Image (tube, rainbow, N blue to C red; front, side, top):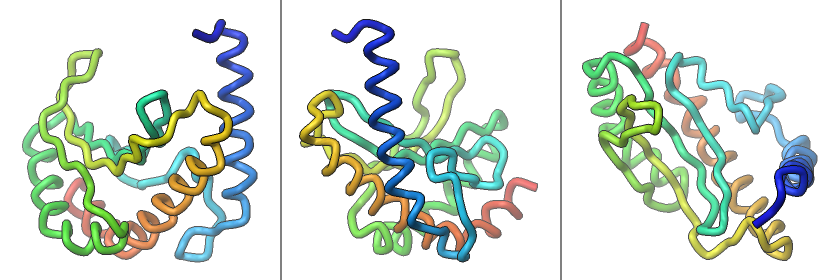
Length: 154
């Protein structure tokens, strides 16, 4: 286990390298973007990057407080599933009704590579490549269909 100050330095090094890599890429709408804090433009819809000793993942979390809104957005995503997974180049893991430690319920779509270990520095280039490819693919999909989700929630 890493000490807190070691973990902080480790995280800063990993995500700093990733930020530098992603600086070369614009969103598919030709705008600059903060890839580590992807702007979904939909309140309570989050795109998250996750890495640990069990792999790395790109996660799309639906954390709408209103269960009916969460249901409608999920149904819309299911209608777009074939398009999304074709763009991503792989099937996602679609999970309903997850429980967060804070006590709220949410849904998630994620793309995971369980063969990579964040704590092995020789895996970092492969993790960066995996996350970059997933982010760019997701962005191509999302820029085309985000207005549909925005209209559902507004």
